[in-house]
Length: 128
Image 1: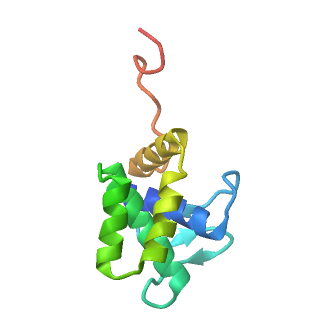
Image 2: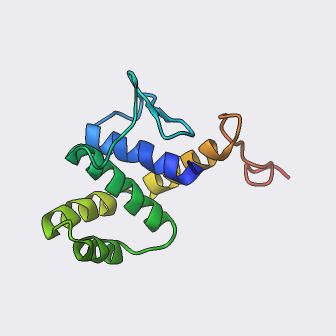
């Protein structure tokens, strides 16, 4: 699973399950989620998991440049229903610029094969 998919899946789980930012959860490369226990979402098995998968995918698409309005319209055209599309849209719109930045940072963190956070370069951190 790619780093951006892992970061978006983690964030979607936090939103749907109401997991506080202080609580550590982690998405392994195989897509398993480590929280209080190890589990995988199965979108075709239940609606909660389908909501998580949809929200994560919409987040990834937005990070790639797709507008909120287009995502909402694409969801409606996919047949999920306007109410569900509106709920996903509302979640995405309510995310602050800072939170989107933290999501991007988490994707970079997942991109490090060692699982350690990627440190900013000297220039980016104010050095010469």
